[in-house]
Length: 282
Image (cartoon, rainbow, N blue to C red; front, side):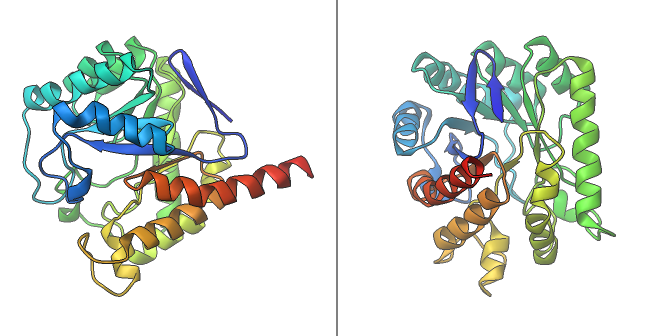
């Protein structure tokens, strides 16, 4: 599958590409991923050199209890970094659910909108349409930072997630935005069993024909799977992240969003080689 991002293309045919997380936030739970805006371009260059084909730039943490940023504060952190990365020739994504921030990023040349609220705000949809941008829609009950406050009992997790994502994708297509991407929303108000069911259901989600992105890097449910509770400050999260993303890549997802770019890229080189060989002999 070819991923069209404005005037650029990423070939994700029989392979999984890596998206590197660039946090210009002082509030991300993954401390080593945080950088100031003045350090951001150097970090972006390093992520690209390590194997990131897309740099995902965000300033507003989605974690429960995270500090709120005004749209102006978020824009001031994100837009200059997007502009600097685009000038450098890097492919960029903006991680925001605020339409005015997305618009500023679009004006700065961003290639992809990454919205954890599923582009449900008509103003966010308008940005995607006006700039013909692809948008990644994510499934989450509730709102960022407050998703744990709503009912998270699912009758059938994969059915709900798939219906929501495909409906949003069709709405984006009908409105005239760029090609929509799907993100099932690992870790957002889902139990360990829910997350495992979604991992098992990835081949079916991929089968709908849209680009699929997964983001589970160093999330608390991975620590739960290791018997360490829902935490992001424990040993072993790198190894668990590698295991998860290898399985996701083997399931056919097109992009994985991660903090540890070099390690994940090395692990995926094995999966990608196997997928290419299988395709050649099919």
